[in-house]
Image (cartoon, rainbow, N blue to C red):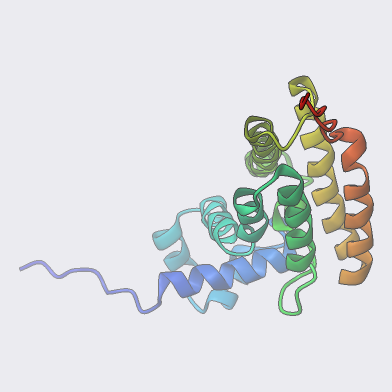
Length: 211
């Protein structure tokens, strides 16, 4: 009987979490396979055998990030009853996530991107697609607000409003990376929401039709 290869001696889920922590701290280009091997406690051949290339590992890491640290802002958009409350909760959840005590103070989608070498173009585009998805998610939530009757903005303004609040999410991450505190980010959130009634003015009160 032919002998099988040696069984894995590590937990892939644990190793993936360790890779997430390292990519989050150093970014894509700042993390080498040797760095990953040391952080994950496994040899580089085992990384390739289990996860494929560094880029494939990074894509899996980003999927894990999206399902964990990246989920609260999206959940806020889904679960709040009105578009305004959803956007407000999304911004506050973002501020919470990027100022937590146990993680780097920025969103991986914003600041873990590769920025230099040509060979990392596919990684840059991958992250750009994920950021564009956030814009689309906000836009769809605004459209739901129109359908539900709690938002009266003209449909042709939704893209601009969604882009504005996507930019606010990205700006919060940059501010946190540069040392802004949670309280300071709350001020930014308040300013962003002060713009809501200009961008999406409330519906005028209905006239009383009682004779």
